[in-house]
Image (cartoon, rainbow, N blue to C red; front, top):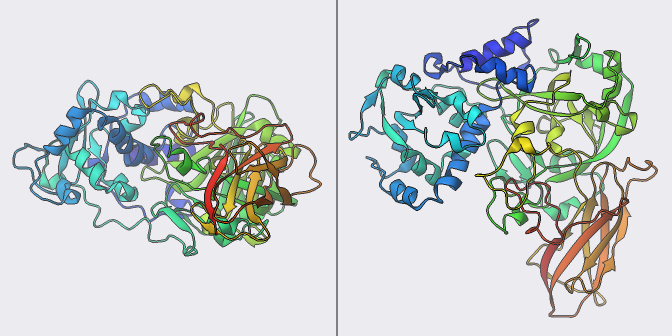
Length: 568
């Protein structure tokens, strides 16, 4: 699998060797014999459908993430599966070591036996530690089954070495319920002698609240968001999908390929800085911002973000339209601009996303290749040395550590473009979801959030009023024109003051958030639920409840913000 992926990268980067790239992930030298997979004729067809450079969607995300997480949600619904999971025969009481323990009640298989089970016809087997697992019955039910097949007849150890958040009792117990045998000692893959891909992670501000450590995903306390219009770099939320790459600026190159006219060019860092420098003030918001509130309706697969997976900054760099025009690109209404990061998974598949070409080529769209954030060079967590900033668009399209741009008739074939960051009906579940039926999220909906006081806080009234602060933002460049607050279930409303807003940008170019303050009349001892709702200049507003917009990925969560407090 790894060897095929390396060949795949070399094929689409014929001018340079894979090892000449300037990214250092500390990926390990994996036992290629154990990690091999016969793709047969499927690779080309996948590439044809998804666009060159994307034949291998992110196996690590599916194998180390979606597969077992979805498997838990799916399988635990089945009572018989619960019983079966309890009957797992393990020689150790520590389920975290079960995959490394010999099951004397099960047969021993050589890796050559497992490699034969790499298709639905032959059965789908994988190994972990010395355990052999048959997941044949599960794969057809998984929405990303074609990606799961990248691990068929192979070991998941290299992936789980990266996605360590799956080393939990629940996941490992469930995995053991699929165990059918033991792997021959000579064929066991070990990650003990592998470099630690997380060893080069940057230092972070201790006030950031981590949702996951590896990869690092964290947000600041909401109350700190409203302290300044521009979010300090060290307090800006961090959303990483893979280890942070270490980039040598002297060797950095951004590859630009235009499939529409056949042109290609590599830009050094200094080459990019020769284009006119521009600065754009824009908020970036994770698609899962406020997912934790949506999870209160019913469970969701995803990080339990609070309201602070958002930040506002001044981004400086060069206009993407200037770079593309220099490559002879002309705008149209059907093409796409694909972005690939220098962060990659164990198969060397990069993080990727895309936006419509019309957005990229619109001078009023303000899409830039940024190398500065709030007047400082980008730090590593935020995309050093270059990232794309796509104002008004969901954070997942603002690809960091930018390594490659492709102008194509096809949108990105990346997992994060095709099988994630899409929203569905509240009635759609993992049994019925069809990711291809929904467009990838681009512009975000109007939203607001109460950042101070915090829910559960006891607040002090001053002159009969409690001060409430928060932010409001609308995607697509729409201006927030009003924020309303209520403490009586919507019977009456107070209009907040918009304290800090971006001015003189022109209609349709309000990329930054607005900070607001409201004074709410209260009585001592009163228990309140404070609501906030924002309205933009298209008179779009927020829905009242998360129940009506719940979706299985927990994205675009923009229901009324609600905070319960008690007045001292």
